[in-house]
Image 1: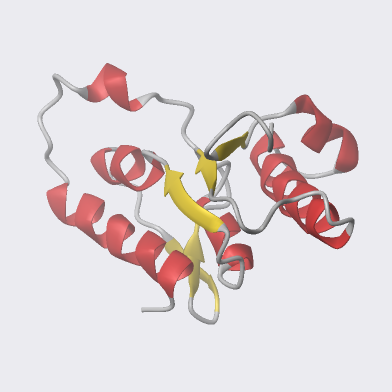
Image 2: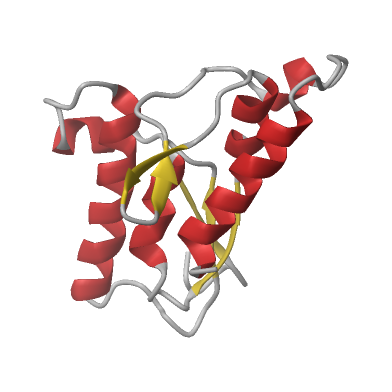
Length: 138
């Protein structure tokens, strides 16, 4: 893709990740660890063109992004995870010092909630802030 695209997108839900980490308690942990390993291995093997921007599609679990703080070639990410979980009244927990996230994930797509009233707006904003902290060290 390096030769044919201006930006490279990498998804979070490849079955390959579950093959790498088959003993995890849920598939979202496998996906998180799998994408971390894939990116690390591709970087180590000099497969990734760090001069080209990369985009991460979605999130298995939001704490995944902590691992990429030093990867300046990851230009953008998109995830509805903080919004969906906030709307469901699920706030990110502090899992370790300064890292916020979830042990498991709601398998709800944001588009299915578009007509729902937002009763937990504070939880949405809280999760968005904690996700940003995971990504940007703020």
